[in-house]
Image (cartoon, rainbow, N blue to C red; front, side, top):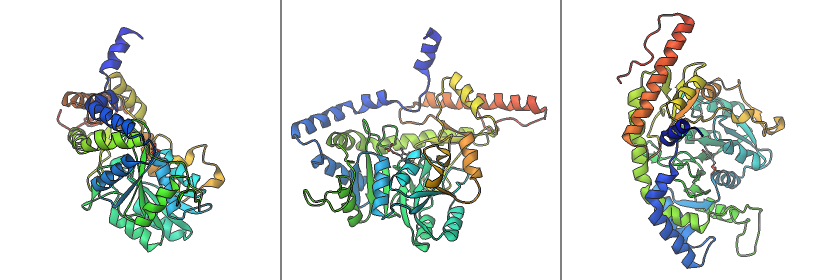
Length: 404
Ligand SMILES: *Cc1c(COP(=O)(O)O)cnc(C)c1O
């Protein structure tokens, strides 16, 4: 590596900073490891149940069931909703592939429905799809980017059509709308402790959240081979347990800090929004309502500008992400017979897939780094604007009518 490249990568602003997180959480995490080691219990012991209680309290649900990852949490939630082979499940094509994968893994067929401009499922189109296809058995609604979908509309829609609602809250820890957290209006919700998530473990983990005691009990069986009473298996489950170690670290080192981390995410998001509002080259994709958990900070680039903007930000030392450049329905892992596509080919989801850029947002960015990201965005926007102007030789307006 050249010295310049090294210097740049050292000071470049990253999406996540796990080293900084370790510096903050190390003492508590190591104490948690000691506690587990001394307890002599490594699987499904006191740590998992203590974390589950604390998470349920924090989230505002009645039950949390720790599992191995968010994908399994979705799969188990679908199993609890009796969604099995051949069933059709309405969902979004714009999500982590895990959302579609969980549906495929229970043998069901995803029916995709377009999103609205900020990336969330378009509930008008979802209503039309449910209206026209009476065979849909469930909806998997994703609170993408941490932006909460409208819980009342979602619940009403599913109730009206008699379909089960599963909420994918992998990105939504801390999101609220209508005074309630996400994950409380469906039969069950799934969340993930993948390290990049708002509440991340030191490895993989996840949880199923529910208000329903029977669903929680069934999920506890399904995560442990399907075992009910000891040595008795009435249905085929998974091996999908949250480890005692992860549970202990999550409870003692991570969860107590989550409110502080969320507050910092909100501050950063507020500052980005303030600085970029009115910027036609990098339009903030804000939540349609409620309070986002700001797992990501998505902006929409102007038509055809995404790659140029990503490159410009990269050379200014700002690492960006894409969520998501390819739609779930277009993945080779989804074979034709697996899936149904409803309506036209998702023009909005495609636009977002082409244009979305995720700016760095994590609790360890300091104010100076946040301003550097903003400066790089405004500069990239101004450059792209003048490049566009030169190309089209029109007398365009300034790229950003914003301050700075
Ligand atoms: C991360 C994520 C998942 C999957 O979680 P894992 O813990 O990685 O299995 C599912 N859905 C969404 C929206 C995600 O962001």
